[in-house]
Amino acid sequence: MKNLKSITTAIILVCALMFSSCSKEFDEYSLNSNQPISVSPDLILRGVLNSLPVFPNSDEERWSQYTCRNYTYYGDNRYWTGAANLSYGTLNNIVAMETEAKKRTGSDLNVYSALSKYLRAYLFINMTLKVGDLPMTEALKKLANQKPKYDNQKQIFIQSFQLLEEANSQLASLISKSDVSLQGDIFYVERSSGAKSPLEALKSWQKVVNTFRLRSLIQLSNKSADGELKVKQQFNDIVSNPSKYPIMTSNSDNLEFVYNAVNNKYPDNKESFGFDALRFNLSATWVNNLASLNDIRVMKVAEPARGLGFSDTSFKSFVGAPSGIDLSTMAAGVQAGKFSLYNRKRYYDGFTAENTALLSYAEMCLNIAEGINRGWTSGSAEDWYTKGVKASFSFYGINDGDNTITFQRQGASILADYVNYTYKFNFNNYFSQPSVKYAGDGVNGLNQILIQKYVAMGRNSGLEGYYQWRRTGVPAFSQGTGSSASGKIPFRFQYPSSELSTNGENVKAAIQSQFGGADDIFAKLWLNN
Image (cartoon, rainbow, N blue to C red):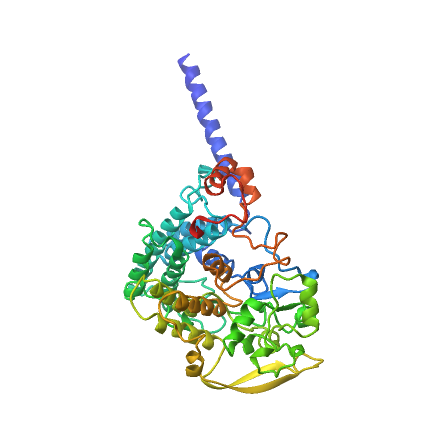
């Protein structure tokens, strides 16, 4: 009997070893040697960064009322009626990037960890600005938690600000060690022009982190008295301590996508001219505000509306179409030369019209001016206001003195048939106009800051123009039959249907707590109440 037990045990051990060996061989043979089993963090970073820009001719720039469509084949100017696209897929890639970076460096302190904290904050803030409450604390745990509970919008901002604080601290540490390991950075290291070394790129990223934090604090202007958010304190800490919190100092720090003529062409270019040149035009909200300020920037972005009968360089020749009118009326106005089209030389002459900014020095200066105007920090709002406007002029290549202005020749049959004008522009004269000269801290000065910030972000910065209107009502947006069925502009997006089907209980609880149970696009978010 004892021998039988021994024999049985031996057989079991042999079978176990055989099974283990077969299983190991099966696992080895089932791996595809032509496919990677892990991805380096720089490759993941490159993909994540490529997903961030909101490109020109997008719905976002129509909703921010910078441009319009006037032909149904290319769509219309109506706002959304349904759900937002959320970025949890990208966030999962960021988690994978963190994991791979730690494997390779053996440390939690590395360039990819630092950037991941900024990217997490950037994406969560951009998502909550669209819909409201979202899973954050319990999100990104995959099978460990497939039904994460929702954080309210206030908590999302608090957690995001903490991530930005940590990103700033980690980047400072890496810079102090002269870390040069950054790869996969398409915005600074790998851009086709004006590329920076990995160490200089880290310095720019640290400025981005703090500049974005200033933008995000401005988004909370209606909640500046909240004791937990500490909006004023955070804003002042950053502006008053540039050694700890470096911020952008010129347009060279802009977080922007750079185009090239081979595989990253600006969406409006000489190849698309024959298809859409008459189908897209500029919006009154952008063009008319510029023209009313006698602002030379309008001549850089627009063609004169020659059907109005004024000279090419008269500001009366620059008129945008109200975004809220119906398409047939808009198209008729374009055909009659009553509305300004995209400037042919700037946008269609080549393939690299202008860089697309996600975050700019000009916007930052005007955000600081707004913060000072609101009493959040000390300093001269007028100085920052002036810096911001001049930075925007620089983006368009405008000089104090003679400037060459180029339009398509009237009646031209080909794109490159241009007419040039020399236009003398003087900064002092511009800033001395009553409509431009800073009116002092208070409502009038604040409105001037907001108008200049809006026009400076034209065709850039995603939905920031719309978010400013939603937050402040400045500038006035056109609303009508071209906006929506009700003639009104929505205040938020709905939650994705996939969230309702996979995490229904939690999303319904969030909708109930925020909007009384209705996932209403016209309901106001917490930060706008």
